[in-house]
Length: 119
Image (cartoon, rainbow, N blue to C red; front, side):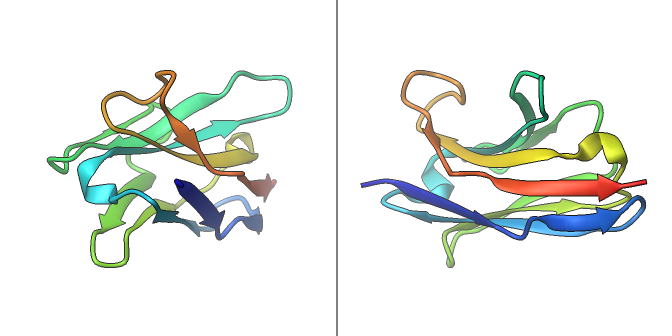
């Protein structure tokens, strides 16, 4: 059974940092495409960052240069370091994994963690 458990969300002020973590069980993060999505109230869920098996990373334009996705194969975790946070980063952040492509019908999702950035 695959489980993705996020942690690290919270309330911060604009300009501060947060680090989200996703602990995976039932899969190996090194063998899957891993990603972080977010969903703000009234908006669609969007892909923020992803890391593929080979280690290449991609980012949404809105977070490039501020967010960094990484994984720890020994701990089987994926993290999202978020710096210079802005109020528009406020959302529920979800960890996701897929063997082939995020967003397919076989993507696994965590329960989400709330990130709130005050101005």
